[in-house]
Length: 106
Ligand code: SF4
Image (cartoon, rainbow, N blue to C red; front, side):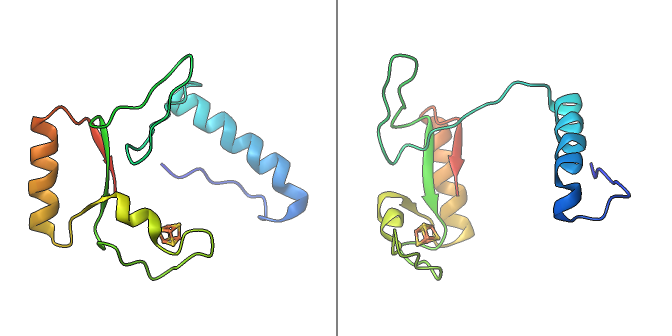
């Protein structure tokens, strides 16, 4: 769905555009927010703990990242399952689903 306004997208209209967007989002999706925690690191607090299988992190570029951000340098990819081809991606996802995985981050 595309939300259109007649307002030019500039800083003067930012608050109005945000309000229109927020209202449309709440109308379409409601006010409930879902958070997913990738499995490459463990989270645990009083309300939530991550699962090592429920939401797997997959890299379709293996350990290679063309962005090479300063803070990461592609290191995070080493913690992900490498699926360099469409076939490996499909098979990995199929096997993960059979083990109880409910989603993945690509
Ligand atoms: S954060 Fe890491 S994996 Fe993500 S784009 Fe930057 S270097 Fe690549």
